[in-house]
Length: 437
Image 1 (cartoon, one colour):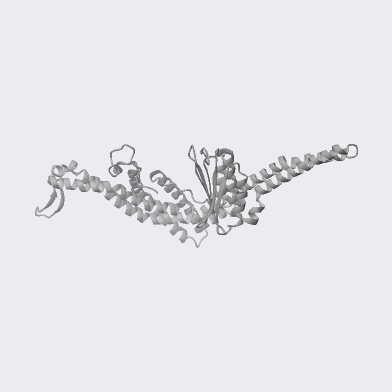
Image 2: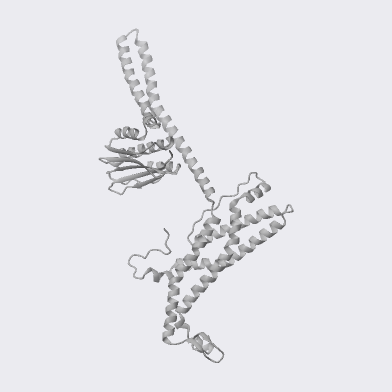
């Protein structure tokens, strides 16, 4: 949750409320509101010229490219606004989706600009921001200067009798010399106190005003939610393609280095046994017996490989029995608890099994634990997989780690991986998957 001002430094004896008027953030936000008015005047004028000129010339051919050029200019002005918001408000808004012409030609670019929702949102921002910038400029400048002016009133009150011929600020008066002036010590003190209250409230008032600017910049000058989702899906698709390619390479490597090499050796041994069958039956029988043992090992390797891809027990009986069988092969004792009232979709079930398999493999190889637990349950619209161990900890999702690859795979299906593994342990890794029944 965003707070208006940074936490009070350790050991500072000045309360945050007293430090706020002198903080860099307060003055940056005030500068943002101060600059908004002249910039919004430029953008509003530009938008009106674009709309009126482009609309007026739509009956001719020139209106369409002129309007497209105006929209492109609005996008450029929006880029300036994003830079200003990033520098003064600390608001980092991504660039909107770029214009992608269907054909590499002038008319293709014109059509793409006119069809781009981001272009029209930038133009709308130029129109809507002007009235708000006018209000926020007047309000913030008045509030800010009034507060500091009243707070420092005791310092500059001398200018009234010296240059204006009156004893202080006049509250009311008439031509007969009757009226009220702030000139007594008590009135001067009250004026300074009122100024102090305004100064202390100023940063919070200004921060509240800039919240509206943040909403407008984020909503109108950033990428649309649809474009963001499309980008996420495109990125997730890339992750899934890379993951599938890595899985295929792993399967090919396991087949080549394991079962394939063993079957090739088996074929050679059987060929030698066939040659020795006539001249040395006993030796041929021993070779056949050895080959039989090799066949059993090759079959076991193929079963393990198939189980790693998608075990038959998972398809036939679901996550509970499949995870129980998986934990039985772990080198660390694992307690399995599966609380599911129904089975999820096959794809989610397979990913949950793969996730549990990877996490238990990490427990076996790296944790140094004496025991572990595996819990699976369904809550709301999420499938939860929790693996905890009492090992030495230190697990993380840094680049190049197996947990980083697992986090990418889960993110590709709108999943999430949370790792809590302090040095010295214990380790608790939680995977969240979308529930799809």
